Image (cartoon, rainbow, N blue to C red; front, side, top):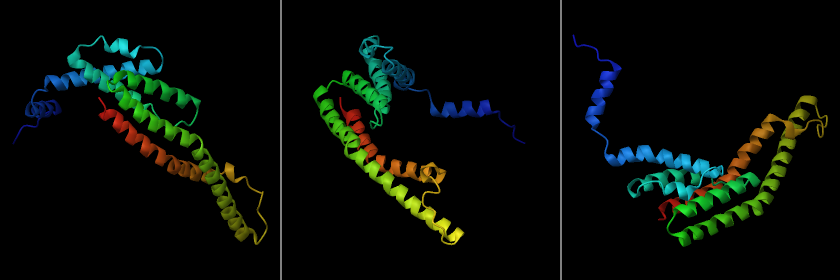
Length: 197
């Protein structure tokens, strides 16, 4: 009968089959998280992004930049409030400092700013209209359900539909759907930034 192997022995056999990681992989595993940490500190106004990048040798700096860029891009979002606007501005400034093609990045930023403006102006109108439409639809459905239960007694004004959990859930879904078009475009622009030198 074969001997049973411990989990450690099985893991060691798998590691041997995979071989030793390359120096490139080791550098990536080590320096990408350091870049992420620097970017988080930068976003909190606690660290100087450019100065800290100067502390790394040329051969590993690109991994640090990749980590920092990942965090900065993740912190760019549609401008739901002033806090997000400030975060966007700070993250975009940081990315621009990391890139060599400043004009190319500024072109992408122009497209992003148009999306942000649209979200704040026309998007706000769309959200208000969608909210009112949903509220009216929900009131009608609730009124019909109550009418069926109470044999024709008018229900209008009896229940605050906006306070109903079902209404709130429906509104969250509607809002996610409305915002998805902005997120899709924003993600495309983020990919352009990643591809830029």
